Amino acid sequence: MIVRNLNDKEVIETTYRAHGGAIAQMILDRRTLKEIGFLAIASLKPGKEIEAHVDPMEEIYFVLSGSGEMRVDGEARAVKPGDAVFIPTGASHALLNDGQEECIILVVASPAW
View 1: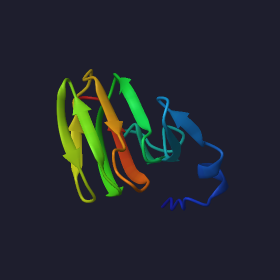
View 2: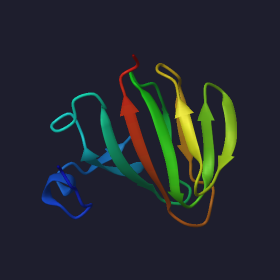
View 3: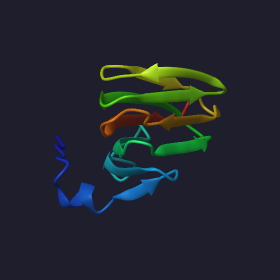
View 4: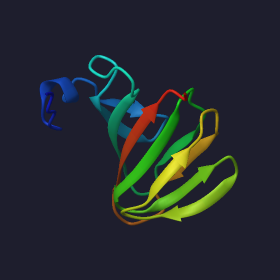
């Protein structure tokens, strides 16, 4: 069994700026996982954006707190805590924090079968 906490050295060492706007950390990734690409957490300050990009894996963005506007292949939707957004492999996607508080998301990525 592997248990990771956001304060663990293995997580803190992975801190990076994701696609221009978010501060992200890998909670679990290919160093540990075999089938799933990764589980990450990202925080996006008000007015900041995870810029449009395309990934080689399908992803799920799960909003823990805050709000924003999610865009996937040109379709835009408001998102709030409890929303899960499926992003197909190869789809352009972006997230703008258009709210007043920090937007925290979990990101799960997996190679498409």
